[in-house]
Length: 360
Image 1: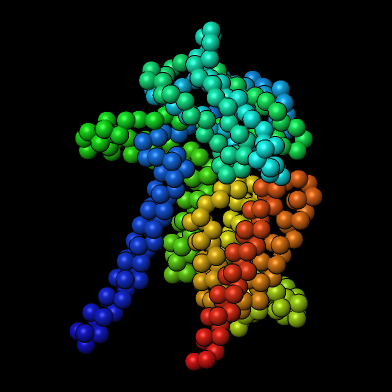
Image 2 (image 1 turned 120 degrees about the vertical axis):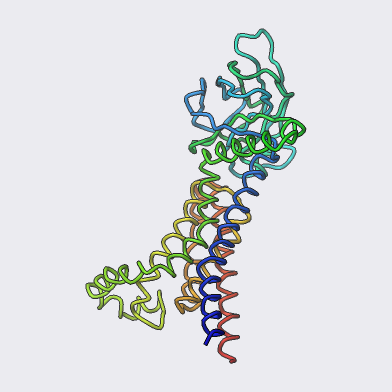
């Protein structure tokens, strides 16, 4: 009797404490890794700047002689990077790439503090492009002007500044020895970095995706699920004829009719994340690319849905790239092609799992 009781308590402890804590640790670890990766170094502090800092903001492609300019207030010392988000189109051959002239100085200074030329081909690899310059030790409280000029761009070899929210950021590079000189200074810097990073929509979105395993797990455990079934059942009754139709069963095959509705919330969250990333954010985050298909496979297996739905989603996503290519939106087309490929891979994995299960 005591053994059964201890085993029951141990299972409860694992189910309600160990697994949630592990999933919480997964969220924290992946979020921290992404924050460091986004800034390329732990010792960088990044602050997004509002669009109002731009004094010249061309809406079209940056062609020869056209430029981006603006001025901003430095909020920290040791200013060393200005990152600007660009839109990319069809990638030109190396010899035809545009050259961008970056210049920065303190406002009202006579000459430019720093200037350098960059081939726009590098922007295709890193759309949120970091324009680095020698660190300015006493930058806090000063206003800096910048200018980015196209030297030989035309209709076929140019980039454009992104209209996306948070398209420019100032970055400050701190000395690692100062950060690590004491536990207090390390904790203060870590807290500042973590909180400032969450001002970025990129970090917020990625962190939300990393939190989904924990949220899904808690939703499946929660007693609120019983109350959630009532409105779901009501919807099922209202649309029972449609839910039992051959077309609906083909789209959402499941062992129980009620499951066709209870899974909707999970599907909406995952597919919503895919569309937000593919059509708007376009992060290219490897961990998001990995985690979403894994969660999708888990949810479909849990609710006993076959691989058919996954292939329908993947094939549907293949319709996006040709459409966006017609409008010269190569970056969006590429991102949606990646998501289509990942869902087709997920469907293939599901088939293998189904075949393995049928052999037992």
